[in-house]
Image (cartoon, rainbow over all chains, first blue to last red; front, side, top):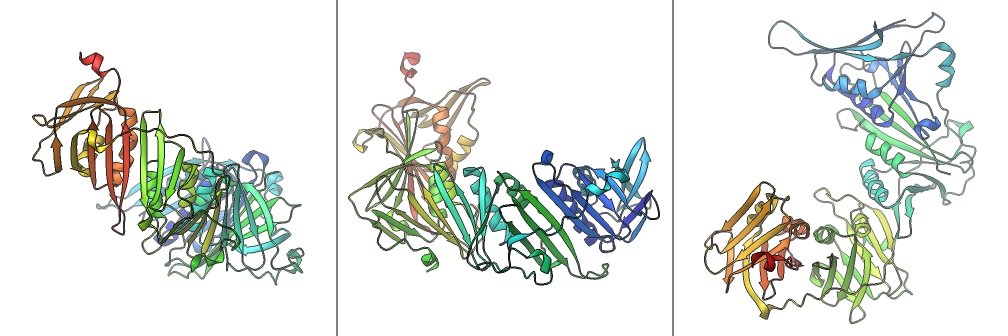
Length: 304
Length: 281
């Protein structure tokens, strides 16, 4: 098992740090899956983490200038590591204006992800900061636990409004109630509602637009033939939703992204789940080989 | 009209309706009196008075004149209800408390009368929020009976002078002692804390002193914990009037100028600390 990778481009490095920061805010521990051309940060839906699951997929070619990995065996050319993303996020914080960042899998007392940051220096000698982040190697028999979540059968799928507005609305609502009801329909309308003994608050968003799902016929069974006006609703823990909104750091700065959408799928009653998908499309930067996207699926189980 | 998406049903009669282009004008004033969760609102044709009390010794009033609102109508002689101020503030700032320049939250406020909720319709950037805040039975308010004829001493200061003093108050002291006198030391703030006592004197001819009308020497102590909430109003204000009456009751009037240059007032009344006379004698 071998892994080594190198980032030279500052824009790539900053973008990678933002993705790691986002993951760190969403999950205490997560799984880092490495394949020959992709990296994944995965948090699978377990009761212990309160019903939040994360699936974050990155193309290595968009971030790394060098990327070598050798899996456990030729026919299973993958590596699964258990990692505290906060540690990686902190290590990358010191690399804000680094010349190069090298990440490799090492064995120092225990398996470690070693992050070597070369900082600019005035003299000829180089300054290198090394972080050793302990990781756990996940054996092959457990790999099946980390499969990509399919797009589930949903009633309504809708683009989310500007996240800053949504975040401030949800923040105030959190002060007033523990759970929030999200309603959406196929005419681009979404409502956020709370109701308590003291107060009821409803925020109405309109003209949000519904993403076309025409290509994936198999996943829109419930959405098809649905009344455009009728609202699908899901009730979720408001803290979980806020954690997600506050955690997103993959900011759509104009230089990096030409489109930034988040999709919300309100599930039907059977599924008890809300799924939010972020897509950021990166504009081809000098170092990057083409437009790419970071997809983060977050699923929050609805409260019973 | 941005709010036309959520018009109040035409058949309903409201005893109070008010609209405001920028909800922040209201929320910032309410925040200046937000030291307890419950407030009593009293509306007349002149405007709304929001009263918050603590420990039967402190009363804060925020006056929002009818002119501040773009539309203001009260159908009865007066309308009164009690409301949870924390909830009201969260609703008013639902789109964020520090709005970007050029964006503001429009507000329409309606109240149908006793037993009905206070309705708020807020709009920013095409997003509409409707809030129904349940109102409560109004409680009897304290009457401090502070009338201008009984005022002994009065000082008007520019707020920055007092802001610094309040920021550096020794909070280990239980009381703040205020001395106002026609002679030296004119105006003195004293604290008696663990590390010793501190006195802060304002000369009579200081630039910060806008007016000085002191008729007799008066020394009174006020619980510092009661005066501390008034720093919220102090932070927003441009001028402050400090008055004491024959009984030693303190009145602090803060003049607050909003972004549009309109002027509002927030007033704090505070009882003096009882045992001061025994301790002094």
